[in-house]
Image (cartoon, rainbow, N blue to C red; front, side, top):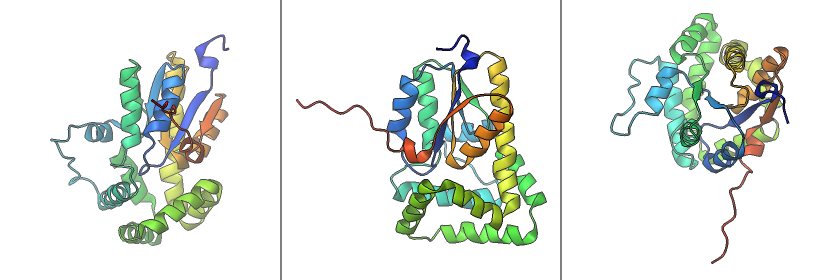
Length: 238
């Protein structure tokens, strides 16, 4: 279809970090002609996520905020049947290995991101964020599920609410990282990896697609709401 692989659109897959998307990801990544798979991870987080179970993750050196959110994600992953946080990144990495494709880590280092956030965030926003993370530890699962369904139905509304409630958070955790991930994907294209599928958090999809569009790169996006509807091959009756 394309004269060169670098003319093909980059495929963006929106993930929810606490929902099991192993089947949809395997279906889409397995069927796609690809030169590589990219994931929203940095080397430190990848090393921790892919470490053997006998080597528990050491989060003692992380700031309070990411440790709180890690607790929230572990709790929700367990209760919502999604397994550990980051499981979708593991699936993407496993598919890449099975297909003998390179795996690219395109996110900023978590520690540097948190440092930028804390330095630039006004005191009021910082307190709101910490309180929100603490409250999330005790929210009933049914409320979380309901809110996730509302987000899937209208992600743009949630994004706007986030920007109104915490503009610094939106800028550092979404806008800046989107630009940096887009730049890394552009570099990969220049290196000849044109047909790339990138698995990122669903909230990054609009901004990352827009950042790539500004750089003249076509994008195909499959948001979380559509991705979770993908089904594997039906089993045939015996």
